[in-house]
Structure formats: structure tokens, C-alpha cells
Length: 361
Image 1: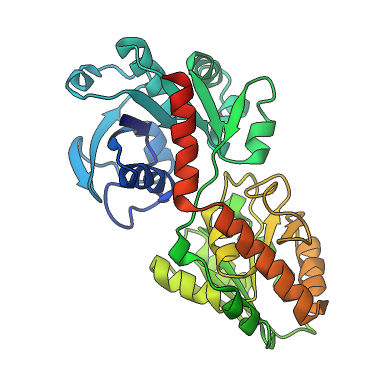
Image 2: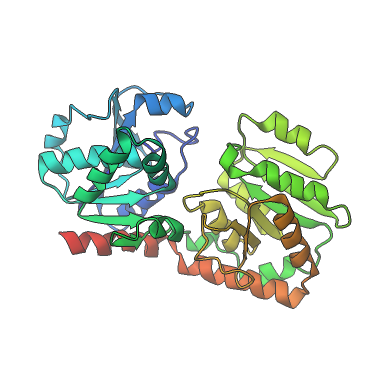
């Protein structure tokens, strides 16, 4: 099958600043399953500038074996799509609002079926930009042949539509053995906590730092992996506690640190899914996820992780609760988290795409 991905959230190079690997992972998994993948990186220029990202020259790129056409659009009218005539594709899959707006134009022009995948950004556009973008996006979604949501809480926002769930997946080799998970809970002094995040406001890293600062009677070591504009302020806020800013490091090093950590906390607000949650579960960490965000719905409170209100007091109380558990209770929650990670396996999640493509072809 020939599949066209349309999105502005696709990397053109390794460590492409501000671009997560989530959508690329889906594309690579489908490629591994024997399908031909082509990407139109429909980059709306003013949106890229607003987010402080680099504008790349238009043209043809190849990254990790996938052909990408980078097309810069000044306006969301998405004129100039005739070059797609020479591309053979059976179905269009869009991610992010600009991708879905562009994909709707492609569907109309070339009469190809379109699957639109919803992120938190789609909700933000509909709620905040009502003059043009909200109505345009609703129209594009209404014209789509199928709609997927990246998480339970996003699906819940679209009760009036038939929406399938499309979680991220993790590779089998990235899942820790249960024996190794048990081993790390034999010693919780210090209690090792990890956070993997950029420093944008909605990630709420400041709230996590405040919670750690409030706990004086437990020996805690917090490592924060990531970078961002607010790093200096966060470091100042963390002064006096055992909080270490590790910077942006390679994925393998992050996983190594997660496997050595007892807990993972990301108190994000309106997180689309949060691949770092899944990586933490796969590493055997007791994982804390914000209510109505990210992996809430897959993570069940006190079963395979904890669901928290994203405020300092609730985070502090949950850390104390986890610290009070005995080794059997800790390892049971950890192993339930590992089981969840195994259910959300990389190629299993890619198959969800294929099942829904078959329904509309």
C-alpha cells in the first residue's frame, strides 16, 4: 500500500529541534511492515515562526529511508499541490491541524481517502482560533473518511464523531525484564525520580520542582532530561534540592536512566499522549500522569501507575504514598506498567492504522 503522511510535525534530520519522533515512528513502523511511505511536510510558515522553529528550504529530503517533500505555505489555502500528481498514493493520513487542513485539500483535488489523526493542538485550534481556523478545521474533519485520536481524553472531546484510538507504541527491545525491575526496588534510598520534558509552560516542570522542594523528610534525587527557554528560571527554583538538569541526551541514555529510576513524573497539562510515559512504564518506573491528559485511560490509578492532579500538593502526596509502599506493592505496580507497555507494542499500534485504512478503501 502507498501511504501519504501530511503533517508539519515530521523531522527532516536527527534531533530536529522542537519536533518529536512520534509521527516518524508510525511511518517507520508501517514501512517495516512492507508499505510504501511518502511524507508531505506541509509547513505553515507563520505557525513555525510562532513556535520558534527553524524554517527549512523547500524541496525533497530523505530521512531514515523515507522520502519527504518539505513545502512552505504562507497561507492555509495550500495552493500549489499539483506536484502530487506524480506521486502514487492510495490513502492520506494527516496529523496536526495544518496537516489536516492541507490533507482535506488533497482529498478534494485527487479524490483519495483521508484519515485525520487528532492531537491536543486540534482542540486548541478549535477553542482559541474561532475566526477562521476553527470552522476550517471542523470542515476538514467532517470531510475525512475516518478520524483517530491519540489518547482517551482527546477522543472524549469528540463524542459526536466516530473516533478510533491510536496510541504510540514501544519496541520490544526497549521493555525492561521484570526481574530487573524488581531488583531496582530493593533500595529506594535515595528515591530516584525522573522527568523527561521540554520546558514549555504546559509541561508544568515548575510544579514538579515545587513538590520536590516541599519534601524535606525523604531522600529524593530528581533528574530532569530536556531543555528549553525557561531553564535558568527552573534551575533557580530548584536551588537547594537534589535536582539535576541533565540536558538533551540521546534516547538510549534516557532509557538507561529510566531503568535506574524508581519513579517517573510528568505533570503535563493537555499532553497529547506522551511517549516518555510509555518509555517510563517500559523501564519499570512507577509512573505519574496528569488527570485528563496523556496516558490517562491506559494508566489506571494505583494499578499500573498513578493519576495526579497537576499541582505541587497532589504530586507531593502521591510521592509520599509511593514511598510508603512495601517492595511487593511497588514491584506489582511496576510489573503491571510493564504489562501495559508490552500491550502497546510498536507494530501492534501500527496495525491500528492498517485496520482503519482497510475499512475505508
